Image 1: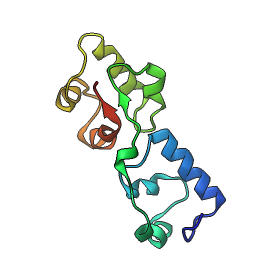
Image 2: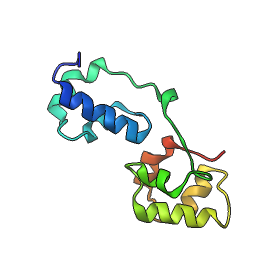
Image 3: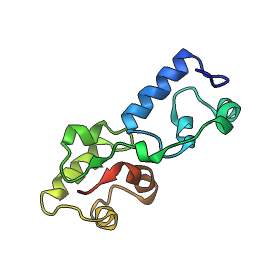
Image 4: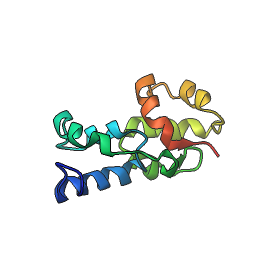
Length: 119
């Protein structure tokens, strides 16, 4: 609320999105919040810092279908592929995860990888 251009409605949207994600890994993710465009973002950009150590990660080998699907960057088809492929073999590395999940291209992988863990 102390940031220029952020009132109670935007603050609520930011918090809701942060909670859905599990935290922010980049301040540019705020541009994904409904109603925050680059001109609004530029007003408060220099006052923001991101602490990636606070990100809540999803254990991709253990998380339920519902928990994986809740993540805003992972759609239904990706979730289905993740859950079905891990029945054959648990994931050990990011590379292995990326190779097996063909629906997850490099762009999506870059977005979701900060939120994943394998153990």
